[in-house]
Image 1 (cartoon, rainbow, N blue to C red):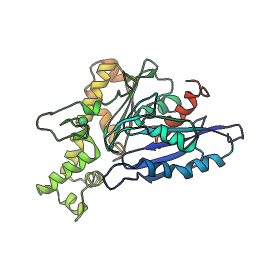
Image 2 (image 1 turned 180 degrees about the vertical axis):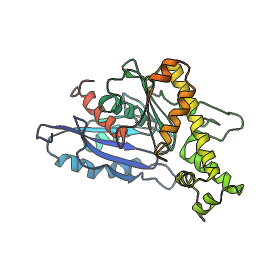
Image 3 (image 1 turned 90 degrees about the horizontal axis):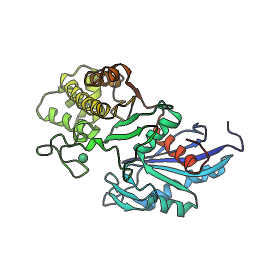
Image 4 (image 1 turned 45 degrees about the vertical axis):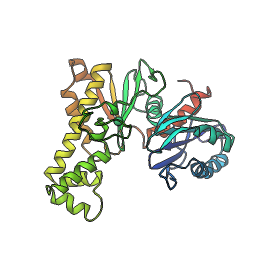
Length: 328
Ligand SMILES: [Zn+2]
């Protein structure tokens, strides 16, 4: 339905390296493709709010030209966001602390802007229009540049005290000898299972001369997480070892969540999840082996994210829900 009365929002997902844009209507349909642009960083490696606002310009213009009612901007950010003010309290990958980004965008374009942590919106998008529709207790889990997610409990988003809940990737596994984590701690789960962690493990394998395949794939350049999946696909034992270890650690973490919160569903997103076709099946098998109750073993549903980018869908849903246009 793209009628003149249709409501839609501009959804923006500001990640650690890429910004995704899409127009999404009140039925949860995309009006056109997802556009992806690089996050503009300044010379000090800090994301430039000013240039980011300029980047948004053409998407606002596009939205203004689209038939129907443009209800505002929904924004997901890869950091902790104050729900009331849209203040980005801490975004390690953007190197932002206390950046009032939503207010700056609202002022620049004279539009309502609703900002929230990306993982929170991904969970919302899944709950409103995705695989978790009608589900009362689930966790959104993303394995990519980072590892973490968000909870939906007793039929609503679990926000905790500051809406910073869901940072289960920062449970320390080895706070003494582990690798430093972006959060400032050491040895967090994230430092074992994220894309960069997988690449680091691959580099160690190369340095130890244990994988001619990975060495060949990396050539003179940097070894990447993607190369580890490629090496595994052609039967490289060292690459398989790396991926299996990631799956085991994520499985322990996710099973821990299910055992703690009696969840009905786990929804998996992120680049690592999509690294190989059978990742979710393998992870599912490991998770199920670590569940405490027979009920969870047989009833827990583990699925992949329902959208090409669940955060964008949640960002749009947040615009409609916040203005009372969509009941949820
Ligand atoms: Zn951490």
